[in-house]
Length: 389
Image 1 (spheres, rainbow, N blue to C red):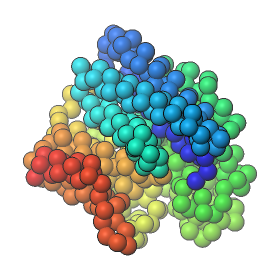
Image 2: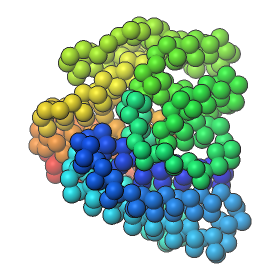
Image 3: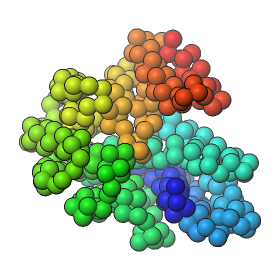
């Protein structure tokens, strides 16, 4: 991985320190509470953002990465990010219990990144920062773009987007909630043939674009127009097959409206998607999964839902994200499974959620020499197991 790509990853990762918590709070609390919470959070988010800019400047240039001064500055910036994440979590704990688990994961990831970097394990530090990337991308593409937090208005003023590679730029624009610019960037990238076959297949930019246009921007027609045009290109058969199935899927949901019981509607769509998939990695049901996840995200934010009902929604969201997972949302399914367990412990649903969580973790850490779980992952599994079984 190039140093520039590492810098871009760090920039995207750190963005959650300001964006994730800000946007989640504003969607969950009444406005007076939001305003008070924003005033309390703002200085800590500003400090975290300032530290992020320093990390970006240090890691974007090889000469600064490999000298003592550059490493000291990067370590110091990561320390600030970790300290501010801890404070942000403590503020969230005062009154936003629904998003407690998100801020807790934020605190853990930034602290691990700092400690690994301080100990000289810079590659491990980037691994832990990637955990933050997953949550950030998932949070920002989980809601309709009509909502936007004022926290995001100045995030990109110190970031030189021209230094980003095209795909990284498209992703960063999504993470900073500049959805229209992000969609245009993806489209330019696809139509200019700016991606290699390997990038198209292994980095899932088309899935990211599908999520962005259908779930976030609620623009099925735009997605249909783009994929119809792409269907005429000379792609490998596996890509052409995906595009053809998505075009058919997008046509089938044109004009579809959410029903009163969005959970039941989502379950029906998931059932339809599974019926169209011939083998585990078949992605022909992707469109239905995206729309089902959209309805589930809308439903879980409705007032008056019981914990048991929310747990069921999060379990279904976990199943959707197992299918929709991309490079930047690989761990999102487990976030939902763990929340289902937290909301409905010692139930059949919790046991099912834990089984799927455990399977994802073991698969993620398996290799030719067996399964090698880090100690923090072992501890997390043990704690979840106690809650679920």
